[in-house]
Amino acid sequence: MSESKVMSLHDAVAKYVHNGDHICLGGFTTNRKPYAAVREILRQGQGEFIVEAGPAGGDWDMLIGEKRVKAYINCYTADSGVTNVSRRYRAAYEAGELTLEDYSQDALMMMLHAASLGLPFLPVRLMMGSSLVDEWGISKETRETIDKLPNDKFVYIDNPFNPGEKVVALPVPQLDTAIIHVQKASPDGTCQIEGDEFHDVDIAVAAKNVIVTCEELVSNEEIRHDPSTNSIAPFCVAAVCHVPYGAWPAQCYNYYDYDNAMLKEYGEASKTEENFKAFLDKYVYGVKDHYELLNIVGASRLVKLKNVPGFGYATQVK
Image (cartoon, rainbow, N blue to C red; front, side, top):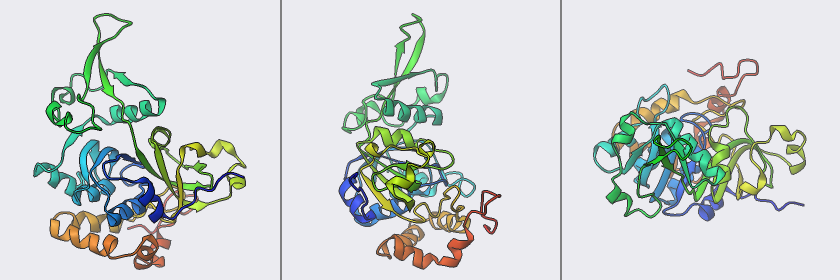
């Protein structure tokens, strides 16, 4: 019988998330973001993260607002449809408090894929002719002081198959930790992702330690009934945590829609430092764990977010 990797979310974060980790979160802006794990990190206090954010939202915005991020590698950060730019992220950057490097989204996604392949660097034509290669958010001098950052944003190299042609060589991240929310997982760590996988499979393969939170915990036998539906192999996963509504207030395809009212509440609160702190005091630090938070949110509110079969979304979302 396979060894069970099932742990509480508290224990998984305590064991596999460390100060200074090079870390990446799964999901996409308001889609299948591992919010429950983010709130647990906030409660436990880990920080100084080197971040490969991908398309981020309120998950990284909260961690930036609480000054848990040492260097932020990103393409954009926003709660789609609510904020054009996440507000604590913007405030930190404008105040000169956030060490930020900007890549295009396609380049960053390919960098994470290259990490899953174990490539030493990634040659692309992407970003050429744009300010993304003319301007560096993090200088070479600053990069040299941060161990887990490459010393260069990129370098130009010759295409060995077409002498005289230049291509952009991008660094490949060396991830310590990935945290991913999925629809189903089994005790051995096999995962099913329904809908778009985004960059989640890549970071699961690339990272040294992977925490998976899941809507449903099913048996190892059940998850193998149709292997074609499985996305992440068990050897990639260090911990499995059963966390229903673990992506809330983001959506989780085929399970529940995003909580638009909560995203708006956070968007409004995050405009100021004072209201941002009050929001976290209520929804993060003021509760013991994820289940206590769900009690505060309330069953009637969560039920209204449930996906309606045939529509693919919740029909009562406002």
